[in-house]
Image (cartoon, rainbow, N blue to C red; front, top):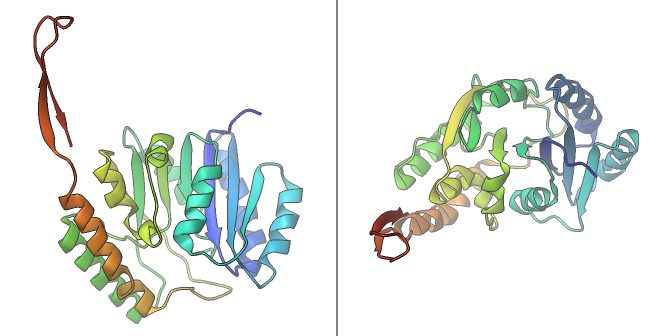
Length: 250
């Protein structure tokens, strides 16, 4: 079987009403790229009938695949399962809640250039004031601790080249820190503004506590990883080389 060029990974839990409209919209957008593609839905233990909707979508089009986690395991686990299953050269992630506008995928593919990954940040967010404030505080703390400038760590729309994911090792909760984890591996990350839409059906799976308090320990773990990263220079002498050669690691 020929591998597709694009793979879209969509983690979800209890998004029954959104799935058919999302697939219809996404299919039209991906067709405009003129590239082969696959869409991998990863159901994180839904109980609202999402599984049955996904079975129907899979039967409609062979380019769609559905993975079902046998029990709720979290977004990091759902993404990890999707990353291990995809076959494309470029991997796109997005949520299933229809707040992400699939048309932004076209712009992100054009903007990727020579970068290894491109992450979106939501412009004119259609969320409540309290949610926007919590997100702003969380991003500020994250950037201060990690010494980065990621504008919107919670934006699900991202594009990765396959080598990024081949070296990525996700732990529970670490999906929030994908840019930092990739930079630790030496990959070049860019950012670009994307649209944001109001949620039509369903509800958010994350409250203020999960967005601000629970990731604190994960943030400290990533900071520890940054500080313990191996950095050294080496010079090798070899008769085959004729003279010494220097290189840097980290």
